[in-house]
Length: 128
Image: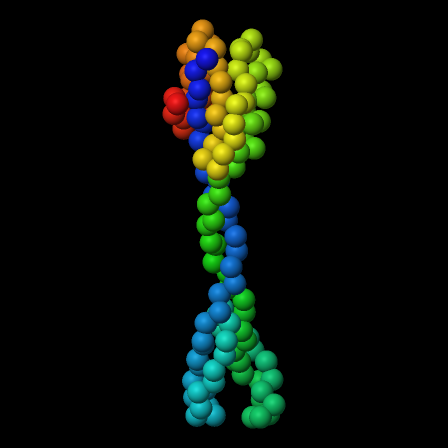
């Protein structure tokens, strides 16, 4: 029986992350600097209570950036193995699971088809 370590596939998850930055805008009519905290400034035409007239005023809007988190998932390997063993008459079994991946035990006559299917499905593996 030959043992093959199939490494867990790396999954990249995109998570939106709110941007917080210091924003400044100089009000040229009131002659003072205004400070805001948030993603970005957007301007809209609205009433200014202090001046008593309508004009362009800044508003803070949220802005997000995408953060990528990498995880290793053994469930994809198990799902592939279940499909493979259902459709192929193969003598293979899961021997051990660890944080790197899953070790399979395969009979000598089934090794070539097993390794071919691993390569075809873009799995990384090592023969132990």
